[in-house]
Every structure is written in structure tokens, then in C-alpha cells.
Image (cartoon, rainbow, N blue to C red; front, side):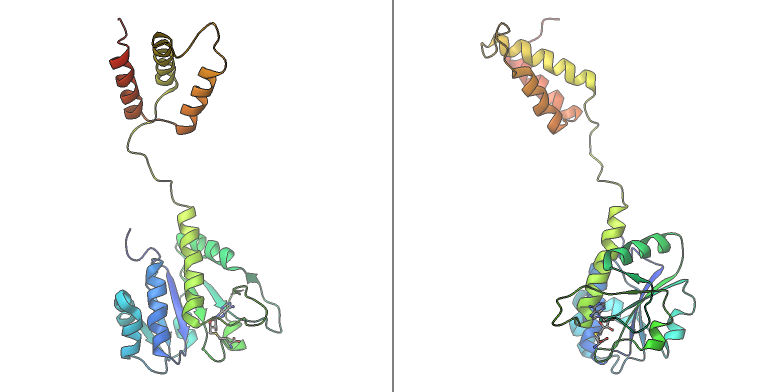
Length: 242
Ligand code: SAH
């Protein structure tokens, strides 16, 4: 997988006070295949704490774009989502983290530029900044303490973005074609004949043996190679006279 799965998505950290949180956010992003980081007036940056906490995501930190305002950070974006630890006075269109992931994947997949904003450690995003967003997203928490550490909030949201992306990806492909219905019928004939020959199966008193064996093989869904191996084993016990 390429390092940046989301070229149209940027994570925007607004006036972060602790550079360690910038590094930890960069790591959280890169772990989830997201690498575009924009910093709006960080209090201390560049800083060795950011590099230290980023570990193998130093590239995300060093390539981060530093700008002076939220307006500048989101100017070319068609979708802007703001994260918030609490309800604000004026209700705004809300997304839950999973819905946020799905929205981001759908829109960025269509080529729209998307920004997700994260606020200051002490005060979050201002009302004015939140009002520049199309949607707000809140990470549900226990009632007693709703404010996550900044980088942890980045982790949760970026995780949901990647999950939404993975949900839309084709399933892992198998290295062999599956056996066909005819392959399976030949196997059952060969198997039944062999089981009779070795005295395990009595066709006069079949009980549910072949039904149960059919159900077993259908559950496994063997591929052609596996059927070839089984047929080979049966042939070594009971060569078919052709
Ligand atoms: N005391 C601040 C919280 C700031 S936490 C406030 O009440 O707004 C720093 C940032 O982490 C927030 O601005 C937001 O971007 C993110 N964050 C923390 N907890 C969150 C939550 N429960 N849901 C969504 N974002 C959250």
C-alpha cells in the first residue's frame, strides 16, 4: 500500500501548544495512511519534541505546511469538518466518527479536497472556526470527561477514515480459482466409491454421510489445487479404472 492513501485529505491542527502533540498526531495519521498535515500558527514549531514523538512519521512533521490562519489552511477545500469535544450553542450538522470516515472517503474519492480541523489543547476550536465547517464531529466519551488528548482524537478520526476506505476495497483475491460444481461432483463420486471400497461407507445404510461430507466441503469452498490434491489422495487409495 502506498504511504499516502488520501492525497485529497489534510489534517489541520489549530494553534497547537505542545509540539509533542504535533509529533504524536503525525504518527497517528501515518499509521492510518494519511500524510498531509497543516499547522495553523503552532506555538512551538519546529521542535525536537515533535520529531521525538513522531518516531517513523518524521516525514509527516517535516513536510507539514505551516500557515497563519484557518482560512488559509482550508481555502481550496470543498468539504471542511471540525472536531469538537462538546456541544456548542447553535446546533450544527453532526457526524459520528464512523459517519465522518465514510463522508471523507466518499468525497475525497470524488476528487474533492477535504480538511478535518482539530483545536487547541486548552480551548478547542473557536465558535468562529467551527462555523467555517460543513459538519462537526464528536467522539462519544464517558460523561465525566469528554476531552481527549489531541493526538488521541486525531487517531480515532483517522482510524475511522481508514476503516471506511478498507470497507470499500475489494476483498483479498485468492491465488487459485475455486473448484467448479462439476469438480465437486467428481470428487464426491470418487470419495463415495473409495469409502465403499475401504469398508467405511455402506450404501445399503448410508445415513447422512455423503450429505454431511458435502456440507463440510461447501463450508471450506476448496480451490482447484486443493481438489487436485484430494483426488490424488483418493487415487492412491482407489485408482479409478478408466
Ligand atoms: N477543552 C477543549 C478540548 C480540547 S481537546 C474543548 O472543550 O473544546 C483538543 C482537541 O482534540 C479538540 O479541539 C478536538 O479537535 C479534539 N478532541 C478532543 N476530544 C474530542 C472529542 N470527544 N470529540 C472530538 N474531538 C475531540
